[in-house]
Length: 140
Length: 140
Image (cartoon, rainbow over all chains, first blue to last red):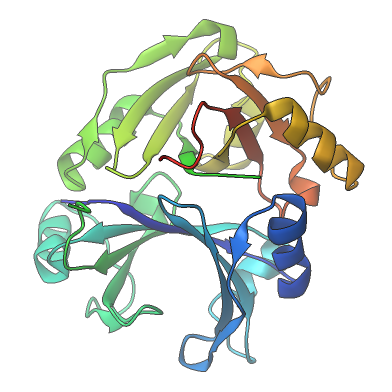
């Protein structure tokens, strides 16, 4: 069911400092900051060639990463995102197997304009998993 | 400096259960378990097409992931691994920029037979970063 790793999201307390670490110390290609008010985050994409890192900083008073940053003040890996070809089929299969989907269970439009769902970390090795529907999750 | 994302390592308390989640629930291609006594872990590789997940379970009494699992009993993302072309040049550049390398600072031979180093999470957004020297980190 799952295809490529779309991205690894790292929540950070200071987006400018984190961007400088990846750009200047690690020598990576970084994007300009992209505020996504409807998602409560500002994001910077780091292109690694085969996949990307997304740095996430809180935006607004009700950011979904605020609680994570309160628990992890230095930042940390917030979630991993796997690509799927059919997010409703993936959801239904996962629910049938006993896994829990967060929220209403209805996909939302994610930061890349594609339908996304988040899976309960309790059912996935303590890791918050995002599923994102893309046209070709195998990358062929 | 950094090239491709070589892998995301997820530490898990129960390797068989974690493998079943990825194979049966998420429908991914998983390897057989590979004990690496010299690294204190048993690992299962999950091939995602563009990169891989490495499930890590503790092996032996002095596993380097034992403390992580004590703090995160359900498991969680343990580290991310970026590829570099020249690990000594990468190390020297990072140290010159003020970043801290864990351990002696001398590369060890990692799980894939390549030289690796780990960077202090305090200097990298709360994320444990492994650098692995590969022949072609750009994937070209």
